[in-house]
Length: 326
Image 1 (cartoon, rainbow, N blue to C red):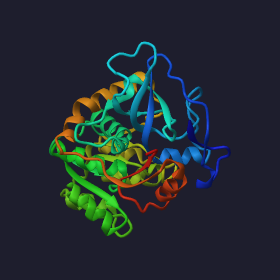
Image 2: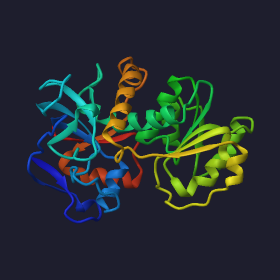
Image 3: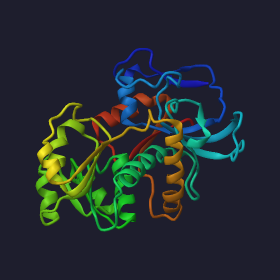
């Protein structure tokens, strides 16, 4: 098969489409003929040499895929050769075939085409696990998501609205904020021109946000705590704004707040399987009912993954960038 390899870390040009051995599904895995994958910021970090895959896993980037099952490993039940699926990966999605643990597979939602399904696994699992399973966003609460026009952000807006939350977003352009409003965002904050702490407090009568989903890390740490409501929960899922920051513990204590930080990739398979099962139970009906949809900015050939990385680095996209073998 062909796959995107990274012979040496570097810029987008470090991604090389080349012939490699086919993966072999192990016990509890299936082999998927990949129709599409998606570009995630973790892939950019891997390309740069900062986020290597766990030992013994696929060396190729790609944390999700959609395609057709072509082989079942030992001990797999509930799936058949020919099933159209999408799945959460530890790596290997930028390829023509990928081995996927059966517990991390999802059926393609009814009414959604196969290629587009690759836009779902990473964002739905990230948002559902952090915002609902950990931070326990409830109806009527105020939810702030940074980077509202990103793949994560566009899904977070829709899922938060589906449970009856009030949604605030940050984004850097009017175009992106307008799109967030179309998805249901109630409070629109241009982070280039406005102070999100001030804006969220003004919009909530001084209370602040009950849950914040943050992709920036260190740069926003203290400001996020300032923006929290009493008993607020801050969920950190990224470090685009750095890895080390100072925290005002007194402010956090005064608000009885909580801070959590998670990644999906390194979690044990059992934990990921539990998240995938929860997504299938709670999110898939919303997708199939037309209440939630994946937002795709554009689709590129898998062999042109470098261009997908450039697009994410320039932050000119809205939603997901897909890579396809078709």
